[in-house]
Amino acid sequence: MEIAGKVAVVTGAGSGIGRATALALAREGATVVVADVDDVGGSETVGLVHDLRLGVGGGIATYVRTDVTEPRSLEALFAATEGEYGGIDILHNNAGLVSGEPLWPDITPETLLRVMNVNLGGVVLGTRLVIPAMRRRGGGVIVNTASMAALFPLTPDPIYSATKAGVTMFTRACAPLAEEGIRVNSVLPGLVDTALLAKSGDGERWADWAVSANEMMGLLAPDDVAQAVLDLIRDDSAVAEERVVGTAPAVPGEPVVPGDEVYAG
Image (cartoon, rainbow, N blue to C red; front, side, top):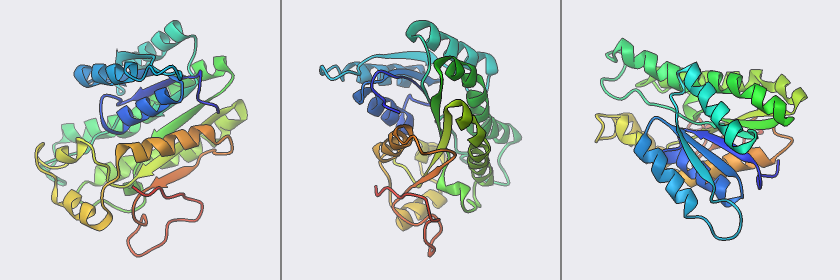
C-alpha cells in the first residue's frame, strides 16, 4: 500500500513506538489520528506532526482520547476518523503495558486484568471494530505490536509474554481477511528505549529483567520499530507475517526463525 494520501489510526501514540509510527506515517504523507488515554502525550504527538509541514505532504493529525479496552471508546474513535477524514486505511494496534512491580506472582489481580485487556483485548477489539470501516474503504492494513517476549518466556512478567504471544497467534488467525483486501501483520520488537522501561520496575527504575535484557541485546530506538511497521504497510505480499525487530536473535544462542526479518537498532 502506498502511504501518501492514506488515513492512519495509531493507538498508544502519545509516546514511544506509537509516537514514532505516527510521525513516520505523517512524513510519508498520511493523515494520522493519534489515539491514547494520555491527553498531554497525545496532544504533543499531534503538535510534532503539525511541525512536519514541509511542503511534502503530512502534517495533518488529530488527537482522540481512546481507551482500547472499551468497545464504545474504540467505536467513537473510528467513527470520528471516518467522519472527519472519510475513511480508515491503516490501523496500528500499538497500545500496551508491562506489569511493573510487584512482579509475578505478587502482582495484583487488577493489574493482571488491565495488562491482559490492553495488550491483547485492545488488539482484538481494535481489529474487530475497524473491519467495517476498512470494508467500506475496499481494504486496509492492520499492524499489531507484539514483542520478542512472544517467542520465549519472560518469566518475571509471564502475563506480558502471554498477551504478546496471543497477539501473534491472533495475527496469524486473521490471515483470511486478506481475501477482502485487509492485511493483518505484527511487529515483534526487542527492548525499545521508551518510557515503558521505567514502568517495568517501580516507575522510575528499570526491573532487573530489563537491565539484563539491555546487557544482552541492547536497546532499539522507537524509530526502528516504526520503520518495520511502515515496511509491512507497504509490502502487499505481507499477510499474517511476524516481523522481528531486534539487535539480537529472538532466542539467545539460536538463529532467528527463517522468514523473519531483523532490523538492527
